[in-house]
Length: 281
Length: 281
DNA sequence: CAGGGTCGATACCTCACGGGTATCGGTCTC
DNA sequence: GAGACCGATACCCGTGAGGTATCGACCCTG
Image (tube, rainbow over all chains, first blue to last red; front, side):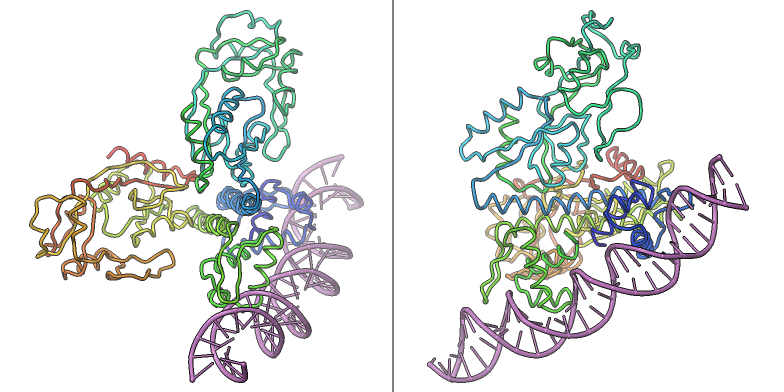
């Protein structure tokens, strides 16, 4: 199978519409139809069921969608890591660390300082990402290590070491009825009359629903201070809050574990050293 | 990047010879040369240094070789898993378990029995592999779970649960001077005058060196009984030994951990259930 | 040092295949 | 029943992957 075929299939499987998929791929619809049916012939199984009004995935198609995404990530990672290895072998060794913008800030600062003090430390480029974006950078080879947060981020297929586990706080507008409480329980949050924010999906688009569309933490905090939404965040986020929002501990919220993650095939000494440094913090 | 280009590069990087690589790929040498230099142009970096007498990898080339192997495995896995999903959704659900031929036999038998007794258990096809071959089956989607042995097998990029940890015994020809000992230390083995066996590499070929070429455990045991070689094996292997070889415990040998492993992206309920069953043993 | 052998690069040709346009056939809506 | 929508089919074209022949650099060997 060629990656072109996988890209084509993923586009159709995600759009569930040949016309839109073709448009997204920048080709015409007929060659796309042909490519998919050729793929089906080669695999010896239908991947999509087409009625002229709708397209749906078969069981085999769902498997291929999942596997093809992983395979395409691996191919792109091969390309990116090779590119980066080329520039690294020319100039100063550099590793890219991906972190969620606005999260784990203090930990990140400490880590960068501690690592920079190590002998033979590489230069660290910090890539601040929208939530959920760090894994993509890792999996596609544009980053070497990432700071992630279980259970929010998907850690499948990554090597991981735990750094800290924290309880969560709910971040509310200042005037909100619950904002006066010293502590809350998850059940209390059900009564909140505000919609939860909507984050962009991996395709950069927003799901339908109530709640404001949100891209980063600055936006989010502003929306909270305007009384438009609320949010559950790790305790350590408190130190970054503006004074026009209120944080209240939620006793029985799921704990959040900040982890350092890297691709399992990584052979970089620099990454290994940075991880060791992180574990000593 | 297309998988064709990756396959071409891997062939050249492994052979370090354009002519042989082309032959292995079933194409002529000129298109191969062209494809590689086109790849280099696109990546913006040389991958190989050619002097008309030898071809060597650059640093970037070494990275690409490593990454390309992983990517090609992922692509093949996508194909195989889709194929298998197609037949599974037609007939009875089946999972493929890969295990080293001749190793962990009792554990495997117990596992298969215990799993078969579970409600809703899938049919389990057992693939008995040459040593080191199980991972390939897992990574290329031809198997769903495998029984592996740390530290012998490479577990990078696989999800793993430990099953048992054992000490090792050395398996010797019956008449060997050390075979009368009740127990040994690693230092004692240095004095053994026999060469260690050679196993085939991932390309199916044998490295040069002394020691007999060996494909499976039957062969190995026969060669030991003939006084041609010796071998270090997990304790549990004793129950499988012929009576014309001798096993002696080695007190300070590295312990071997038998693990159950599966691809990190696996979503199969059946695999999860089999792993749970294995952990209860 | 001439001559032959080895090996990757280059030149040039061919054709298969990926991609385009036009159109068909089936289905839903009004 | 007309029209819109959508995937499949028919047919054409150009790119580019792959082939053969050959070159040029390098290493032997007598």
